[in-house]
Image 1 (cartoon, helix red, strand yellow):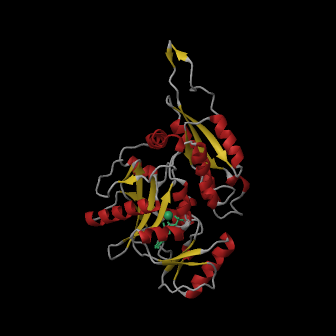
Image 2 (tube, rainbow, N blue to C red):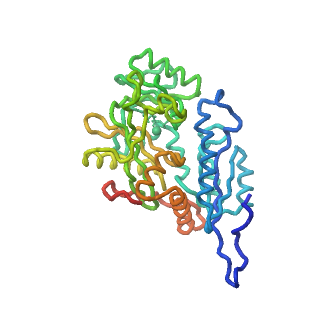
Image 3 (cartoon, rainbow, N blue to C red):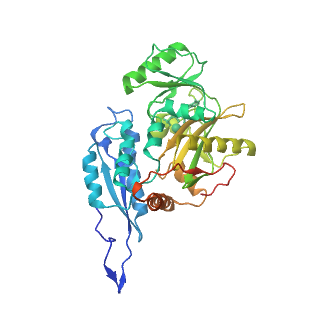
Length: 376
Ligand SMILES: Nc1ncnc2c1ncn2[C@@H]1O[C@H](COP(=O)(O)OP(=O)(O)O)[C@@H](O)[C@H]1O
Ligand SMILES: [Mg+2]
């Protein structure tokens, strides 16, 4: 419900009309409430969204903005009613799944489009592409963006003729859900065991990809209509014990203080020869564009020994936690958290003006060339 109605429209102040605050509905999935860390292998990733939503709302609220937190479950008819009641100027979309099903992530922006409410982040098409790792691979390949060779295995009996080592990932998860040290396999027996395990735990196919043994960069892009590359970040694996593969596992992302967490340290603005840095940025820009990402997103890249930056992951609506890569990268160009979320609201509102009653349905955003500087 709108918080206190303080900044609503109308009323006067000393004879002048009181300025209307921009009302922002902050939408987030609350499906983690029905599960537990034991029964849901992606629980920590899912539960994190609530604290991100609160922090976004806290940072939006000021003299010009009024944030209304709105948890979303599978009841889209109710969501529609609530939005009609709240009458937001725009929505801050943090929904990553509905009813514990990540496939439904794009249902919320579709409802928003239907209601003509502009919203932050990527359009539903990009969100549903990004959900399926094999679809992203196809888009990248079609656009000529370097990405490791891969195949999809639906079960342990499926064929795979790629050379080892390989990495096995559930085909429609993110946040490293389903990825552990065991995901890197060196022979057929290991491969089939991990594929069988994913089929049992996640009831989904696997993307099996050539393992790129090289430096890992996270490239954040931000801005609308022109998204620009923010300063690079690299994962420092130097303190990871030698017996563990150099990857950012689920433990690394979601289990604070774990060995994997302590062995995967993000480093802002790493040392990198200019030509390689330019190649990494170029690949990120091309990947962002190929998947149709809008406003903000993060592209994960592994740089092979031959100097080719392989795109391994494209994340529209990436993690906006204050500790995550996007916020860190933005602060590198002087955009603090509060400015970051307010800029995203401004981008969404810009689409309202331009898209008029068509909601967010306008052409794809531009992406600045990799050479065009780092500030959005
Ligand atoms: N082809 C690959 N080569 C090397 N490491 C990889 C590869 N694919 C994934 N990884 C490692 O696994 C992590 C998670 O994989 P990613 O594809 O980014 O999945 P998610 O969508 O869950 O973030 C990456 O950050 C990286 O450390
Ligand atoms: Mg990733």
